[in-house]
Amino acid sequence: MDMLFVIASYLVGAIPFGLVLGRLSGVDVRNSGSGNIGATNVTRLLGKKLGVATLVLDSLKGFVPIYLAYRLLPESNSKELIMMLCGIMAVVGHMFPVYLRFQGGKGVATGLGLFLFLSPAAIAISLVIFVATVAVSGFVSAGSLLASGLFPLWLWLFGKSPLMIATGGVIGVLIWAKHRENIARLIRGEEKTWKKNKSADA
Image (cartoon, rainbow, N blue to C red; front, side, top):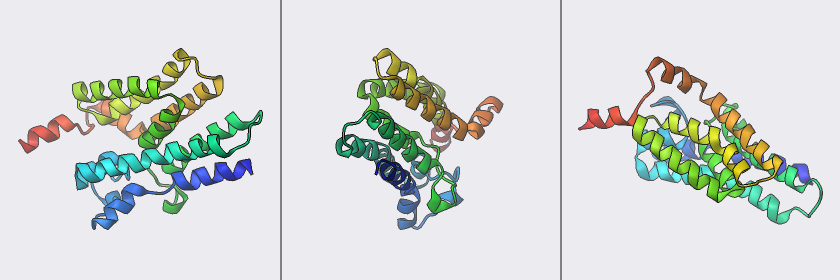
């Protein structure tokens, strides 16, 4: 029974909301912009409203599975472990969706939903870091990397359990791994920046 929650979490996480919203608008987001199915690329291609919708839906994919596991699973010595596995697998589902031949997004929004369940206070700090980093650098990827990389530290400072801290660390590593191309472009100075886009549009 416990593993059914974990499997269901993966299948929910694998739902490609960005792709679905894009197709409803007549655009396959995988063929334009960065080719990513996440909120950032949807925003670039289809505007803020659909970008925000993608962000919210992808975040819910991370929050709902672990919340339901918390509410529905009976109390046991393994409950917290199963809950954390549900959260991790939801993010893994977004990154490697079976519906899209395991070619998915980078997990930031889905990780956000999971992190929101783990610690709203830590999310508040991470959002400040994300916004400040993007405002200063212009790079969404840099904000995502810094915020996700530091999240386990906030969990530790807020006294969360070792399992929660480890879960934050696993998600951070996965997000960094999925951003390896962004990291390479940042190093080369070739990463797309919102500041340049705004300048070009002005």
